Image 1 (cartoon, rainbow, N blue to C red):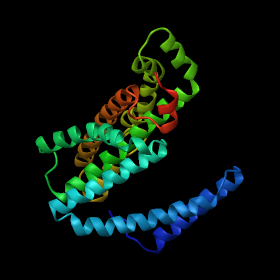
Image 2: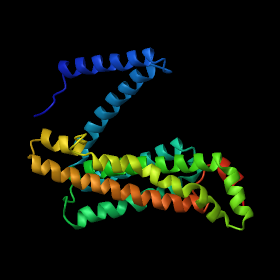
Image 3: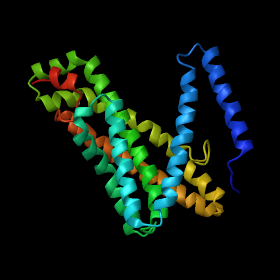
Length: 252
């Protein structure tokens, strides 16, 4: 089974987009036109991505270069979302700590071949979810540090070091950031049929192949996000991975 671009897809997208915009109006949500902009960007970006991927997947070197570009965009996106653009080197460290071991495992175990056609989709999914995990952990940690500054100061007054005082505030927020990823794994095949599973089926694979691919991706995502979250928390504790306002306010 395949979904070909054409009038049926265009019609379905237009109807769904109109429904989304209508709900924005009914719910009195801000900027209903933003849905149209988002959809237009998705069409243009996915169209461009399809052309680029088709051009590079036959070359391992070009595929790796494409993945590097995708990773750079992921880092830029997450540091912008958490308002810590100046800490991009440390965000890179945290994300690579989660991503590289997972990629190494799937390659060394020969789960996927070292070919562009396999690497681009799998590593792309892992990188995107690593970015999401980093964003969630940092947003929760930074919000906690802003809201509970008095808790931080009280910890310092009791003789704790800056790293220990920051840890007292942010440590309990790290598991919260991992909940969406854990729920995705727990409900796979019961509540949702994730993208890799559906993609393999649409590509003509058997249900067993689809399930194997999805289990690999889900467990890889969980491992990458967990490692990224732990490393990011350590960097936050050391006041390395922080936005500018918190760097100034969390002086020892």
